[in-house]
Image 1 (cartoon, helix red, strand yellow):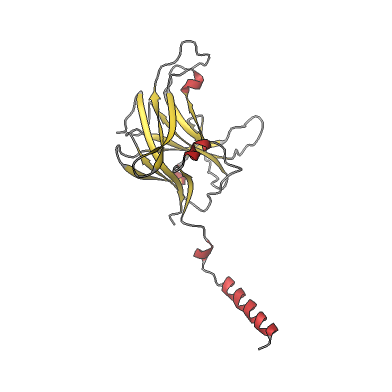
Image 2: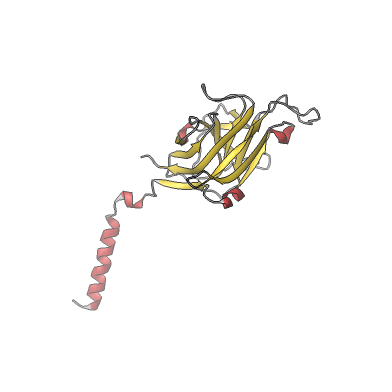
Length: 225
C-alpha cells in the first residue's frame, strides 16, 4: 500500500469512528462543581448581607474552618426581629441574613443539568437557596438579576446532601414569589446565594429569632437523566 493510500485509509477510519460516537461520549459529566469550600480562597467569592442594611439588628459571618474531615464553610450569626429606632427605612421588623456569591465572570451554563445539590450540616432551620440568572428585561430601569428560590432543609446534626430539582425553583421578586408562568434559563446563571429568615420555612423546622449556623462542604450541579 502506498504512503498516500495508507494516509487516506487512516483518515477514512478516523472519520467513521467520529460518525459512530455514542451520544454518551458527547455529553458533559454527570456532575459539575460550582463551589467547593475546601480553601480559604473561597471566601473571596462571597459577600454577606442582612437586614442591618435597612435598620435591622441581625448579623452574620462566614469562615472556612476544619470540621475534622477537611475544610468547609461555616455561615452563622444571629437573627433579630428588632429594628433600630433611628432607621430611615420603612420596615417594621427584621429577621434575615444571607451569603451571596459575587457575580460570575460572565455566566455559567447549567443547561445540561437538572438538579442543584448542596452538602450541608445544619442547625435544623430551613434555609433558602437562590439562583440568579441574567435579567430577561436587561434595561436601565430593571437592573436587578432574576432570582429563583427554593427552600432547602436537612435534619440537624449530621452531614446530608440536599438535592433540589431546578424545576422546583420559583421566580421571585425581592423575596416574594411572582405569580406568572416563567421558566428559568439555566444556561445564563450569574450567581447564587444561601439565606435564612427568622420566620417562615417548612413545617417542623426550627424558626424564630436567635442563633443560626450551617456548614457547607460543596455545591454541585447534577444530571439525573
